[in-house]
Image (tube, rainbow, N blue to C red; front, side, top):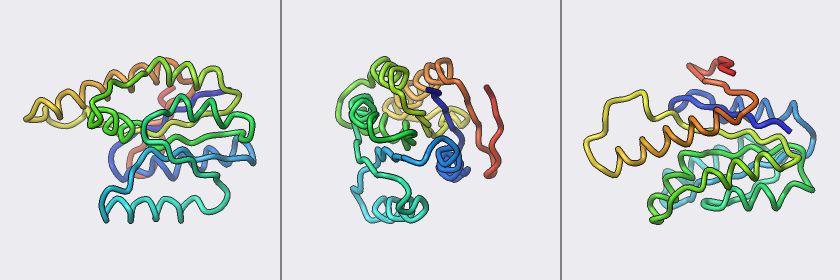
Length: 166
């Protein structure tokens, strides 16, 4: 089944578009949430995302093991939106772990699900002024290149408008 990557800047419509795509790929829909409600602002963002997708998506919360989560839900779903890769990456970096991009790609590639991966583009800005932020930006760039190379479709969101890149 296809791997679809939806990327763009903050508040560009990535999640909304990923949900639209998911609705076109089957009636059994899942949403793998990587965010953790560690503060009030994030709690509010998570609640808004839940309202946006309503009851038509089964929510799976997994901040670290995306590959395992993909493998664990393939029998009950047609499509899985994974939102978002940069939050997942941040979770791993802050936990002192390296991202296993191969595991993620292998799980998505083996799965009978359509996997729609959402991510924030962070490489278009200025060079960060600290080592941790530069490391994160570099890891995100590598992650995005590897996913895009393997993806069947890649979309870049600008001002709420999807542009098909691949």
